[in-house]
Image 1 (cartoon, rainbow, N blue to C red):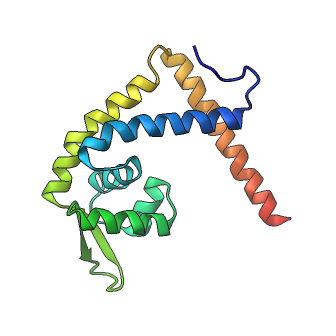
Image 2 (cartoon, rainbow, N blue to C red):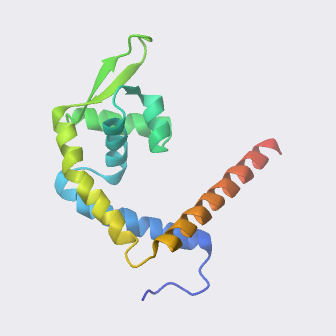
Length: 151
């Protein structure tokens, strides 16, 4: 089935699995000239146009410098446009161009099919439990980070 050691740690297993999933999505998005990281930001803008960069970064769960770099690239490719915010002249709001919208609509099935392939053969009950477990691991890590900051 796989060549992972049976006593592989959870952290190692999560890391290996994440890299493998990212590689598969990268290969499937390659014909569209977009990476999974770029796609995640583009998709957040598609879902909620008119948000600022900070809001998009939070929705995409990326830090602001990474989000800035990705938005600059998406802008250069002609997939997003920046509009000055009427409330704050220093800020801008993000919108898709028609080309960007078409790209998301073409690639959304690719992303959905890829995610479907990732969970093939796993029951919905097992997926629900797996999701709860991952959320608990995330909560534990968040709590651990907070405790480390307070020490």
